[in-house]
Image 1: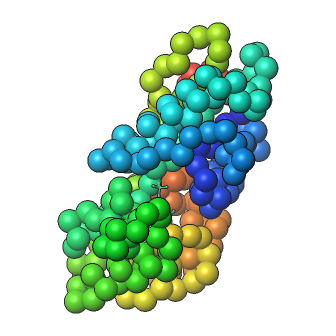
Image 2: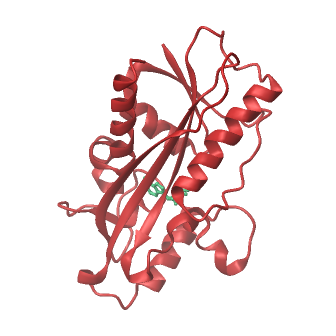
Length: 222
Ligand code: IMP
């Protein structure tokens, strides 16, 4: 079986990736006490950040002999997800800054709370009518094999987008991040109202993971 170490400390992302890809893989996640670096996400693109996360974690695993590496005959990959929201009326913001959108103003370190990010988004869009509230979620996945016997290759990159619009107030309790404000195209409920299984059928992450699944099939790994 193929093992995927999901290179994120965001438990929601891990849950969605595992739910979408299903039982054909074994999943590991980064634990608080892992001797793995915290990656600074300072690239100007989702792809740049996803590749940086996957390569940094894979290199750390190889160099530091972290005990989680399985036996050499097993297939082991690091999978990184960089994702975010692009709002057309804001020129594509928050984009790569989605996780710390509110903190961009305060200068605070680290990510902002979902509530603060959503409040800022609503504030900036207060005068924008429904027809101009178009937006999309983007997800870029970077996948790199970790194998002591062979040199590390450049990550495979997979992308997905989900078009929609930003509502006027948060609705629903499911999901995470901007889900209570995002209404996917063709729906009249937010991702947070639609629930996990509907979201995971049409999300940006689901589309990127469908590409990844195809790559595994084509590469003969699965
Ligand atoms: P990062 O990829 O860890 O840099 O952060 C992604 C940020 O984008 C999250 O903290 C959320 O604010 C937002 N985001 C990404 N994917 C989703 C999603 O599926 N639903 C809602 N918000 C998301």
